[in-house]
Image 1 (tube, rainbow, N blue to C red):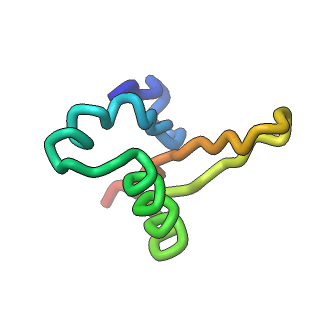
Image 2: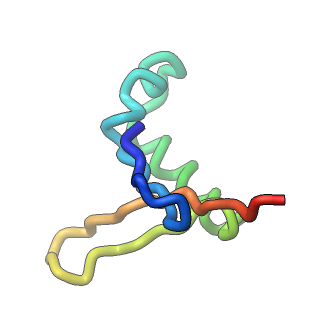
Length: 70
């Protein structure tokens, strides 16, 4: 996966990077999107969703949150 080089920022997840996993699991992109959206609802401390306000299309970005270091 592509990663931000800044340790304090959330890491953007790219669905295109999940293609191999999608094929291995034999799941559709819609299924993966549904799981990510539910994860953001159930565990907002682990994943956040950001919807674009600059386009008419429903463009959504997914970000894995940096968990606090113990």
